[in-house]
Image (cartoon, rainbow, N blue to C red):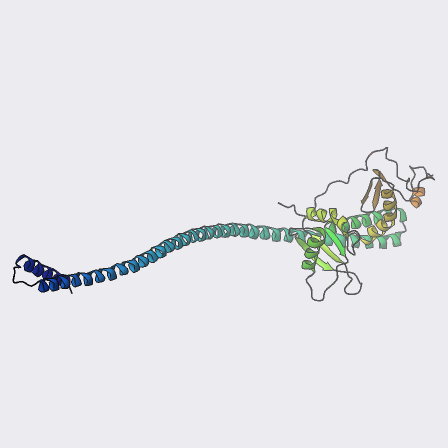
Amino acid sequence: MSLSETRKLLQQSRKVVEEADENTSVTSILNMILNLVSSIDKRLQSVEKCVGKFDEIKNIITSLTSRVVSTEKDIKESQRKITEVESGIQGVGNLFDNLKTVCEKNKNAVAKTEDQYEVLSVKCNKNKSDIKKLSEKVDIVNNSNNGLGSQCDCQENIHHLRSSILDLQCRSMKNNLIFTGLHEVRDGNTEELLRTFLYKEIGVDYRIEFGNVHRFSHKPRGKRPIVARFLYHSDLQYVLNNAYQLRNTPYGIRQQFPKEIEDNRRKLYPIQKEAKRQGKHVVLVRDRLYIDNELYVAPHEYDQMDDIEPTRPAENVLATPATTGGRRPPKRQRVSSSTPNRD
C-alpha cells in the first residue's frame, strides 16, 4: 500500500469515527482501524528495508573513500618518482656535458702528442744520420791511420769519435727501458701487455705514452725481453723508482745502454752490491760508479793514472776511488733533451 492510499484510509477512518452514531457498528470501526494499522505496518517494513540499504550504501561510500585515499597516495608517490627521474636526467645531462668536455681535451692532447712524436721521430732520424756520419769518419780515420802510420794523433781522434758515437747512442736510448720475464703470446699486443704489467705489478694507474714497444734479441720465442721508448722522461723515472716492488719476482726492469756501456756496468754490479752492503752511498751513472761521492777506479786502471798513487789500501777492496778532495763528482753538463716536456 502506497503512502497516498494510507493517507486516504486514515481520512476515511477519521470521518467514520467523527460521524459515528448509534447505528454505526463497532465491528466496522475496528476493521477500519485494523486496516489502518496493517497499512502502517507495511509502511514500516518498507522503511526498514530502505534503512538496511543505507548500511550497504555506507559501506560502498567507505570503500570508495579508502580507494580515493589510496589513489591519492599513489599519485603523490608517482609525483615523487617523476621528480627523482627528472633530477636523475638532469644529472646525466651534466655528466654528458663533462664527458664531452673531457673528450675534447683528450682529443687536443692526442693531437699535441702526435705532433710531439713527429718531432721526436725527426730528431731520432737526425741522430741516426749523425751516428752514421761519425762512423764513416771513424772508417776514414782508420784508413788514413793505416796509410800514414801516425798512430798517436789518429788513435786520439778515433777514441774521441768512438766516445762521441757512444754518447749519441746513450742519448738515443735515454728514454728506453728493458722489461724481462713477460711471457710472449702469439699474435699478442705487446704494448697492451706492458700496460697491464705496469698496472698490476707496479701500480701505474694512468696511461703512459710510448713512442715504440717491441721485443728483441735472439732468444727463443716466449723469452724475448721488451724494450719500450717512453715519450716522457718523468714516466720512465716513475717506473724506475717503483721497480723495487718486483723483488723476489721473475720480472725485471733496467735501462737500455749500448753494449760497451752494458759490459762495463756488469763488471761494476758486484762492487756496487758490496758497497751497498757496507752501508755506503752508491750511484751508478752509465758505466761510472760513485761511492760516497767519489769515482771508483778499477785496480787495473791505477797504473795508467799519473796523478794518483798506484798503491791501494789492503784492508778494503772498495777503497780505490780517484781522490777528488772530498767533493761531489762534477755534474754532467745539461744538454737539450729530445724528450718533449709534459704539460
